[in-house]
Amino acid sequence: MIIEIGPRPLVAAAFPSESLFFSTESAGASFDNVEMLRSLPALWRALGRSDLELIVCHPSFSAPWSTRHLHRSILSRRFLAGRSPLFRAIGPELLRAKRPAPLVVIDTEDLPVINRNNLFLLDRALLYFKRELPADHWRVFLKTAHANLPTPRWRLGRAHRRWEAKLRPISLGLPADSLGLFPEVTMDKTVDIFFSGRVEGSSSLRAGGLEEVRALAARGAVVDIPAAHLPREAFYRRCAAAWLVWSPEGYGWDCFRHYEAAACGSVALINQPSIERHAPLLAGEHAVYYDPEPGGLTHAVMTALADRERLRAMSDAARAHVLAHHTPDALARYVVEEARKAAAS
Image 1 (cartoon, rainbow, N blue to C red):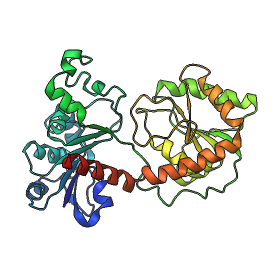
Image 2: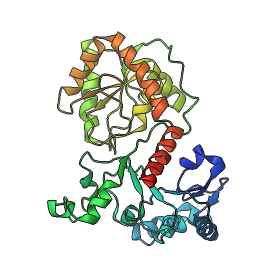
Image 3: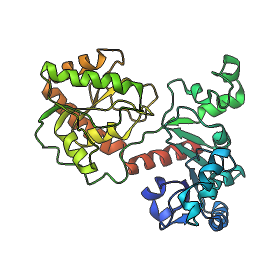
Image 4: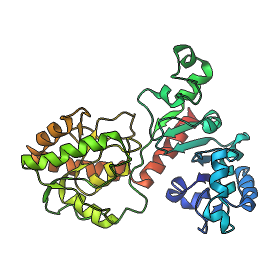
């Protein structure tokens, strides 16, 4: 038996017959709901089951007693409607008590650090899967477990080395509700580069990059930049019609668009990674990467468009790679397999 605690099921959705899911977010769904105080005893009893093989936890952003959480809970619409989210962060806190079953944590937040309130989960966990895992793993402790950038002495501490050894990368992958919406990959390519996404209030890379994308039109490239937000299916059709889909980092480097572009039969154009990746889209094989300095995007696009047959082969390889490694089911299997290997070692 597997127990999963979090806002949405990942492992429990992939292994429904052998899992129990306790939500920390969604009300009214067909699973136990940790938001409601009366659900906590059921979770506590489930955590003590003799047939429990694995516990999966998605960490809360804030501790349930933090000022931020209390403020958002009391002033929320759910509180006024009698469905207070006040207790939704308590579920993970039940894992402070030692359990015989191994615990794995799946942290898909945009943050490249582990919040201080979740360090107890890292300490308890067998493995900690982190989406925005810095290439230097020690940076996840910046200003949380360590007052500044971890020093050599701190990094050599036995307990800290044990923490670092638990870290594993994981991707956002494809959205759970996207499968079945992707268009046929045989669509004709009518656009060289497509982009749809937030620029203002997002990553600083996007404003400068957008200028370069727009300037590419003056150099003969066919550029598609919708003026308004697109519905999901329209977004996917526009991806499929493009040779390249610009996918710059937003609040985090890893984002859904990297994998959606590939699933639509296009090639993602991404700024150079700053994180360690799970089953990465490889440069020149699945994706085109560009340097963030001025002119880097333009050079990468013009070089890629000079060989469209290569782009077609890359798009085929990228689609196969994403469907093999970055669907929700594939990510759930990765988590469970890594946990079983670690438990057996």
